[in-house]
Amino acid sequence: MADINKMTDWDKLKRMIEDSSLDDKSQDVSESKMLAFLAARIKGQDEILKDVAKLVRLSWRKKERNRPVCSLLLMGPTGTGKTELAKCLAEYLFGSDRDMLRFDCSELSNPDMAKSRLTGSSSGFVGSESGGQLTRPMMANPKRLVLFDEIEKAHPLVFDLLLQVLGDGRLTEQSSGKVADFTQAIVVLTSNAIADEAAKATHGMKDYHEILNALKTLLSESKMFRPEILGRIDKVYQFKPLQGMVVAEIATLKIARLARDYGLDVEFVAPELLVQALEANHKVSKFGIRELERILFDLFAPSLAEMRDKRVKAVSFDVDDEGKVVCKAK
Ligand SMILES: Nc1ncnc2c1ncn2[C@@H]1O[C@H](COP(=O)(O)OP(=O)(O)OP(=O)(O)O)[C@@H](O)[C@H]1O
Ligand SMILES: [Mg+2]
Image: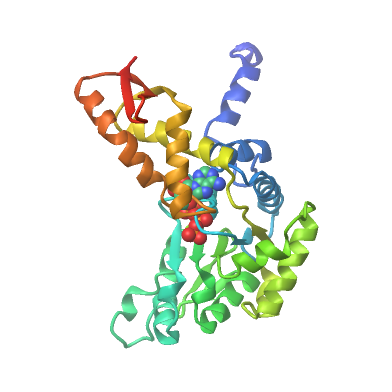
């Protein structure tokens, strides 16, 4: 009989299997790998990313759970990375952000419509057989990230449904009476309703727990959330306004991504051009970068398209005396 101990390089095999998708790793999330993934995409919010990675790792390992893996409330100015964080989490933990369920709560302000949209129409009514847009996909695949944007705009009834989701990890479909499971899901709520007050209340604070306490006090005073809902949210994070250098870093990431869409690599971008883009962005949005992508597109896409037609592989962006883009093939 052959000695199987010698039949292969077992150490190497072990490492390869650990790195592959062969074993079910649903019980295990590497905090450092997850943090590296998030940090490559989200800039200027390092403390939040660290805390999220830790929270998810600890909760993911639990054997039994009767609530979602975690529930997060992300607050802060527009265009600072709240939705982006939700997408990155979905991609890292569930393989893609395509299965992420996203609800715009401004569309959930009417109680009857909100309830039937999320949990299906009462049986016998039109559309009751297709079920709820929240419950039905959850029944099909409970491993998902569920995002409620602009949560402050939702009708209080939506909060009652959320209470069941966050408190019991389940929600009953109105149309069929079947129960959707949320114990493998991540629930993210975002809000920029009290961004200004929150920024003022936490101004100058460095300690993360101090910030959290100030936010929780503010939230309960603002009456936006009933205390029982607030009590069931694992973490509240205040996203910081993005500073100049951070926006510059994001801009270079976005230029690289834009160029890749044209099949090109970018070797260099003149700082003058980045400052131009940042100034244009600052004019339209002081704290965030909602418009940055459009600004970069207007600035760089024409040359990228031209270079692509010339079958160039890599480019650099310089600037002429008038501050115009000069694109050179590399
Ligand atoms: N901190 C950040 N790091 C990297 N990219 C960012 C960051 N913040 C925003 N972006 C980019 O800007 C765009 C808008 O960001 P995002 O959708 O996350 O904003 P938001 O905070 O959810 O704003 P809103 O409150 O208006 O929904 C995204 O395409 C994202 O790529
Ligand atoms: Mg958003």
